[in-house]
Length: 461
View (spheres, rainbow, N blue to C red):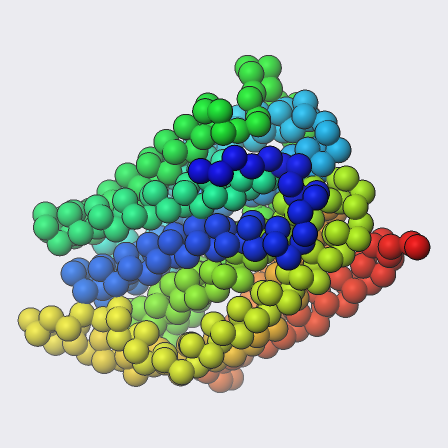
């Protein structure tokens, strides 16, 4: 694999650099998303549509705990990028060591909490009726592997902050491919059902963690920490927490949304309606992978150049990232608008031996998913401004505006909308909440990003 240095973040042309950073990130996200997508297709075809709904119920809990690693990783990586940009290696090392210790402590505490309240959490997140038992099976097994996932998410963010996106890509590809292979063995060959799906996921977390650990102990990493760096430092923790809280808040908002959506949709249409959202949720993770790749690639570029006081490059990176992301988002939008029926059918079993209830569920899902998908993704072409704008403030270490802009779409607009509109518009009120919140959040983010650029990124000649 090509030997790269963080110094390239401050010297290469922005367009070329963004592609170099974003493509591996996008491929990694694509493979990881394909893993979730194909996993759902396997589960839907080999176990049943109720099993898809069961996994969807578990996602908010495991997703939030795993998000702790991502939050600590991205929060600390912003500090590391700027420290490397200003040639402060010791600060980068201390930050990374504190990230590791913090991730280990918090993830173990939350796993213990999650296991203790298992029977209360699953129904609260929509695991009711026929969904409860398969959801509990999946939840308990997967939760054991969450600390491994937390370290993997932390590690991949730090790898990217070092300017080594290809290694971060591999960290996502290895567990994804491993999970699909083990899905086939455990579910199809051994017929372990939900147990097989859960063990495949947990073992995949172990594979990812193992690769990340290998990267940092090998010659590939510039960050060679010692025991002293693992000792918690209050000032470093404050910086990690302030920036990591942005990512954690976003992930927490997503978990709350899953909780609300699963319960609202269960009340509107039972298990079948939850299955509709499960399919759409998978597409929300999968379809936007190129846009998320641009966002991930943008973060270290903006952070490094801001730390090096190369403001013209920061401004250029914002404009280039928005342009690239907008084009890719439009392509995704067209695909989803044209083929929603075909996409929905991929998740449903064609087994002729299905029970009458399973056949009825499949028919309901196939009827309702295409229209819902079109509404959910209706504002996709404009989300680039929203994503890049919030990411910019996080990259340069401005935690408060990053937090507020991150929560604008999910917290300030979407959650109130889904609590209000379904009362008047039923199922349609749920789906229309997505594009309305996207549009409003884009307006707010665009305004503050433009104001920030004019105030602090003006290049004097």
